[in-house]
Image (cartoon, rainbow, N blue to C red; front, side, top):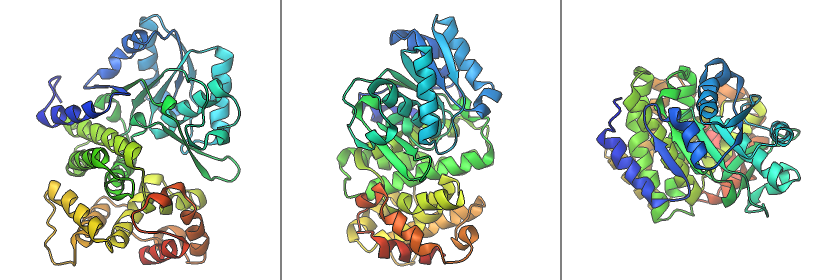
Length: 396
């Protein structure tokens, strides 16, 4: 990837002009400017929220040095865990309180960014993270937030939501507030080069699922459709490239931009049944989120294809990336589902539920929990407990 933007990236960045809440800084070496960008916001003492892996990889120190050179004090919280919990958020908040910070930086994947948002809720508005489950429940302004994604997956950098699990029940809580949105998002594909192959795969599939699900939700609109389609056009062709050629910075950049676009689509449209079905698998069987949602996505596409409007949208997505939808499998949804199943098989990701849960005895409980997930209500086709169980059984 050269310092000059390729056409694909220039076109993508122009789409982001449709939103103004978050300043997007993209390019090779963009993270070098973290200090100046923080200084431009008037920050003086940040809590850098990250994980041990990124500390060991040198990324946290890289960002810290940029901040210190700009005259900004840095306190580091490096205890972020995958699928952050209410306890993790509380620990980050306490450190922020003790250090008297005036801002947050989330460095890492969705877990780091969501932990930073969650700690911001608690530091500025008090209470427990449970108090903010839902939308716009914070009554006070929140501290400035900068986010630096090191994975191309969640799109949390462009969302006002933090997804936090209850430490005891493991129930996921979606805490959303327009005050929580990042002031600046720094997208530097160089930071994704150190990702293990499995993380690249899981986060990439998650981003693809975001593009597909947001395209058909019952909240979809012209803006979300724009982001869903553009995200899919960036993500699907480049997913295979970053697996076969991990050092391809152009492809890495396209995945980062695609994930951010899909995050914008989530903000406008929400998600659907694939995420509802995935969350109980993560809670009970510790399945990596990207694996779980990737496995369930083709079966949800088939389920939603009972609706003509969904079949048409799946056909439009397929046409946008030149997937053949006239292969005789039945309809556009069936063809897209088959394509994604084949893609999962090619990269060695699970495509059958039996490979994860063993017997069928847990399926009724999983279905009950899936139906209660907040994303289920946005699926275009009613997905209650019975429907969720049937989808699990088909995937089995």
